[in-house]
Image (cartoon, rainbow, N blue to C red; front, side, top):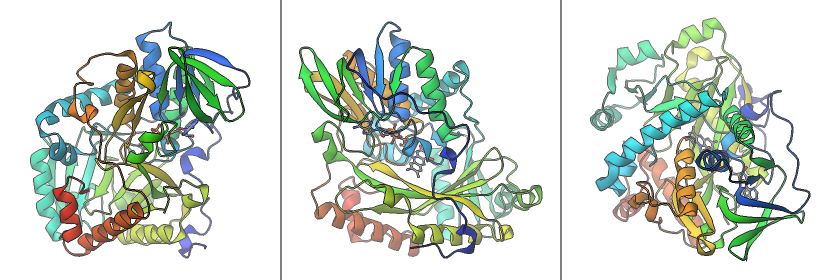
Length: 462
Ligand SMILES: Cc1cc2nc3c(=O)[nH]c(=O)nc-3n(C[C@H](O)[C@H](O)[C@H](O)COP(=O)(O)OP(=O)(O)OC[C@H]3O[C@@H](n4cnc5c(N)ncnc54)[C@H](O)[C@@H]3O)c2cc1C
């Protein structure tokens, strides 16, 4: 299937962020058996932060990181670059699940975002990290009331009426907005991953790419980490940051499903085109529907436009072919020009998708396996750019047997409800997706299915 929308015709079928000449050369594969104190599996943000923080905690610890493909090629190199303070996929989700610890979670999340900023400065990671704030826009009258409620939960936020909103960023679809000045940074996602890999190596971490881990096996007080090409890493401890891919710990697989999210990138806007939109504050934007869009400017004034469709494929499959979905790209392109009709004629340079590790609590959960020799953080759903650093700290606490404020959190100790086997998982997720779309068409009114999910703490409300 090909795309229909004219503006998409020449778009490259690859994530914009990864399609640049400064993508680093491949690191060596693992070509011989190795020994390490800690073996990290996964070269996305989770694995990279785990390796860095492990060395910061104990510089003498010998750390090896195994990445099955390339550093940052998966979610970490293809996301929207919204690096949020929230550890719970938004305040409302956290409040709903862990009301007794929401203040602590809020503080830990802000500390985590500040720590990311400091680390990027310390290791000279050039990831265009900036904190311009975010604006959530209302495009239908009933959403204005929701914005007011959101304002009550977000100290320091500012409500914008239609004129004030359109003076900030101009779209005929906007009728109000809420500015949150300090809860989210914007980053260049792939450069963040590449820079973290350099930082890890500067601390002495050995990184191997194209080193796919096929399984773990106990060996004395540690674990043998087996790879597809044969070599084994004999490690004291193993940290797993495998996100939407099948976890080497089988029982962890029950808790997540891969859900595909899609994005477009425009060509750079001319000065006149940018002027027609305004956007001088360069904030990250999103809207209020269940099927929401997220969008932002890049350092060279392109617009990244993503979200809306969330697609699950039967059987929990992750496949390269799923990264392309022409009907979603056409829909996203149409919605882009409805939002910014003044940009008519602008073209998209890139279109891509990627898998999100969705769990039923919509934010990370943690676990240990093999008698505490291995630990994992999974289930970041759509908000892991910032939260993965916090997750890495938790994983290290679990591996090191540290009793910390983090490991005492209910949010860390509790597991989400697992997904049922097929065909029930597919049927339930598809019904939920259709119900959320219907709610968006009916002023947010949730049908019986969504209300049932809400009652069991399984409802998603963006
Ligand atoms: C299109 C899209 C947009 C998004 N937008 C945002 C956003 O704006 N803000 C936000 O906060 N979040 C966003 N997210 C989510 C965010 O990108 C992820 O939560 C985050 O990158 C997860 O990092 P990770 O390291 O856990 O996973 P990944 O980046 O997926 O890394 C996991 C790595 O583990 C490797 N691996 C897996 N299994 C093995 C194995 N057996 N052996 C060796 N290696 C293995 C994989 O090859 C992969 O490189 C988005 C995601 C997508 C797909």
